[in-house]
Image 1: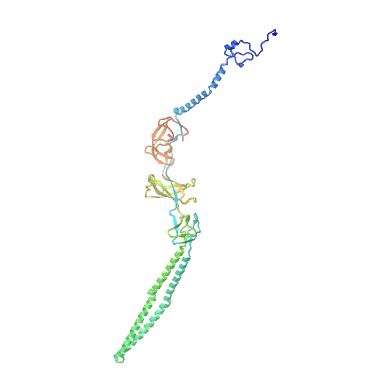
Image 2 (image 1 turned 135 degrees about the horizontal axis):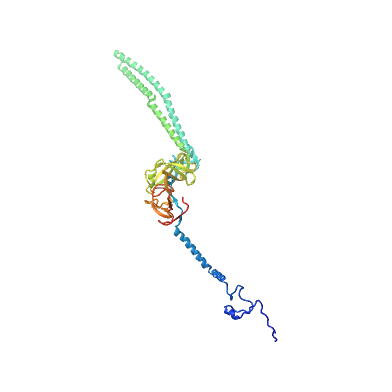
Length: 456
């Protein structure tokens, strides 16, 4: 075959460098287009910045972990070096009221258990539980037909006794008086007949028999007078018959009152105004005495009965004022006054019962047996040094103490406590106004560094 008479020139994108140079540089030998990027220089090496960037990118996770570790170490080292951040609590002067807090229930001074005084069948119950009733209101009605018959019988007995009294006064006594008058006339006549017979017998004109007859007639007349006198005396006012008739009349009246009372027992009424807080009877029930049918809470004074821990007994006194609020209405507070302290202590609960009277008038929303919280003010002082209870360690113990902040460090200081309020304590000794304390809840040891936030 014929060959090209002349050689072809190398293309611009081809490299005619000896293959030995590429091999010497550690790069593969290429013929034709170049294999490396256009940045290659100095024998095909990458620039230093490029190689450094690629190295950092490959170690990016190790670098990020190191940064996080450095941040955590710094975060933990700052509190260790400078101390934790706490909200300082400042001792200040203000009025302080010591109070005893307890809970109890609303009660009226007494409750009325309503029941029946006789055995009977309930005819109607015209009231409902929770209803307010006035004094004299009928609450329960019993069936009364038999008792009405007893009343009618007693009324008839009264009428009979009254008729007997009138009979004695209008008939028997006048007749007895007439009989007495007639007997006295007969006696006078018999006396005259006897005197004449005795005179004639002395003169020999009458026989002994005639004299005896006259004497017997005189005795009969005298007996008739005495009987008539007794009859008049018995029927006259104050006499036995009159007294017996009047006694029978009084007995009849008493029987009528008993019958009327038993009839009245069929209508069970409210003895005083109040609210029915319980109803345990329905129409048709057979009720008996001593069975509680309803419970009435009378209107009037309302008491709050609470149990106070016996350790606070020495702080209580009659007449102390208190504020109270029902658990159902915590935002509506009302005044009360301590009026009773039980002289005995409940050994099971280690508490003493006290009663408070709601003054001047109880709120209309109070209900029987409602749960109430009371705050009894037992002592009060003005302008004393106080500290929040949350800043005092062992506040209820014998040796209370605080961590006072001095020069950026917490130092333990013993304190002496006076009055104890709901949120503050009176500091009698150990602190001065303006001293700042570490809260008792903070995890700070004596002598440790602390940093404070806004003091109060």
